[in-house]
Image (cartoon, rainbow, N blue to C red):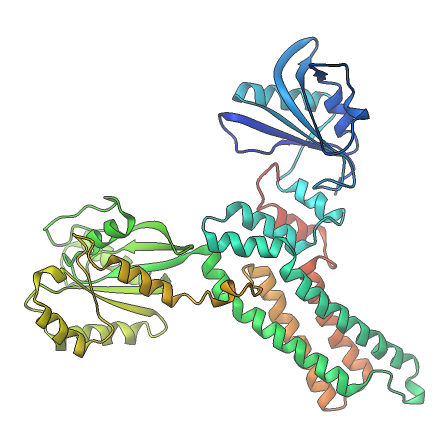
Length: 463
């Protein structure tokens, strides 16, 4: 990896805007910027300025003024990357952005690869690997919950917890390794009782972190919710009511929705992806049959299933409703099911109360008039276990971290068994090293070019 040259990239989103920020980082960053900068008020050199200072002037090339700019100077090691860094704030014209970048390239800079600024921050010890990955999560966060988790990880909450376990395990590992040097004397430097207590603490923390991934994955990627039911019960109307816009076509004709329609909203800081599906019924229509097949595919992919039926339809008797609900639960036993009776404004309170006695989980709504929609969203919120988030506990959202935690737990379980069975120190040391290896994969003590390439390839250029 070439990390000793000077790189440049647009740090703000591409396109026209009020301003754009162009970032330079590397040993020649200040010199390259200084060669193109003319101060407005006095003849100042950027090379002589203090770190964390702003300077107003013109960006010029061959006596031609390109734009009036504001230049920020950050000197190593007190910058995001740990290197000399320049940020040029210019007007957001596409032409100006391209001109400035092209001129900086001619002056000796190189276009940055995806995530290369954050990669340099990691290589220079400004961030560990899990914090660096949290930067990408923070940029892509689209809800309060995903933002909160990414911020907690970027500030080192997760890596600090892993590092503490790693440091404690290293202390005992060194004592175990020392025992190998005195194998012939048959001495023990590591107190086995104290060591077993440490292993138990590590197991407990790893299990908690692994369990948190179920919540973290939901927070990061959103909760897929499938809206299912027979044709013309109001599934599309419900989707429109939840989204507060006419997203799906609504018609009195049964079978209007032939394909799935998806959209996302934020409820109490958590993203939900609602999926309006084709009505489930027997049909000879080839196109509608394909839509119904997709409905069952979406139920398989969803975490929550909203089963919707029409309260005004006299064919709906309690027995038939229960039969349909039992069928869904049997086919999809792991899915969380929300039972919704639509068109509640068309039946009496007495009829509704009678139905709720038989189906206690029933939520009655009128999607058309948006009656009961808040009750539905409150029920969805209850289904999401974000208690750990509210308690500021560490939540794992990264599948790479999750995989490393699983493997670390497997290895530390072997260490636990070795202590119980009084296994020799040399065999125990192998499992301890493996545990430390997987801890190191998370924080970045153990890396290779392929791993770093895979991680930072998912970043945007300029970060």
